[in-house]
Length: 439
Image (cartoon, rainbow, N blue to C red; front, side, top):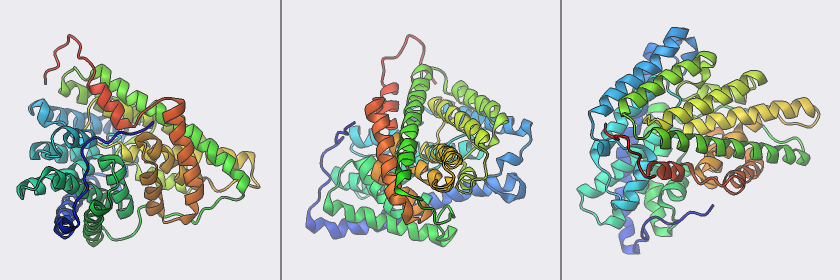
């Protein structure tokens, strides 16, 4: 499904390149520190309250704690957002795209503050969300606010917003190239040669700051997985088709929940999100919070097929319901988890059917991450580069491309689904019902 350019061209003159590159350093530095602080606070609080100081160890909680953590988080953030005007609590990538299109990229500080606090509470409470969506909003706001402070024109503020986005993805994921491509492919929807340079510089500055605090190791430690034979590309294509179907279900689920519940009180929506997450997590605590530890387990084939299938269903349900009800978290992280789970499941089945020729299920898990991200966001290049930088495994490029193409086309053309952000926007802009849409 084709994308339309959502604002006027961001092309700049050669004489402006040096000046904007300097601003790129400033935006990358500021965004890098903001994202590092955001990530540090989340991990510090998680490590302080979970067993063994492991920020991902929600599985160690008792059944009662598994229920109460997300419920308490939903109540807390619901109470905070209840007292914030509706236009001041709009957050995330959708909010960023809206201001890019309709407000000349002039993002307000108030919404970024709500995103910072709301994102921390939501993730720490164990809701099935990611930190990348909030990070994109925070990075975009950093770039926009810097542009506004220096009274730059709208075109330059748009570029600085893109700088902030690339810096945020780079600092959050340790993926500078994917950050640049994400900013161009998902946010700006334009490749202009001169305006790319400040965006690259910004990602570089943020990456260096992230490395200084968290180190430069890539996110997932994997073996050098590779396909066993060219005939296995059939299984890879099948994986992509299955993930395309899952992405379509995921998109329809989030937009459906959004459409049906958007008119109700934010407090009760987020409280309900907490209760539902707590109930679903009783059967699979692995669905809680970021889920990077679950990805690691799929890469090492440490989860049984029956458990994989259960976690897939509950992860899709918890994420769709939570984000559809308005939790201020991200959806990129969950797409990676869901993709890894589905890929690992298909890989295990392939290995059982063709033990002599099937590759390690860990390869399918890696490919699944990129395919699910690409199909959900309709961002194939950003997804491919993200999984490459997350794993530093060059063997995934060819099979990754095949799965990404299959998944993206299945989701968009076979099932007619747009990108998740377009679907959510459409769900939010449908004609309101007679119900009171108040706080």
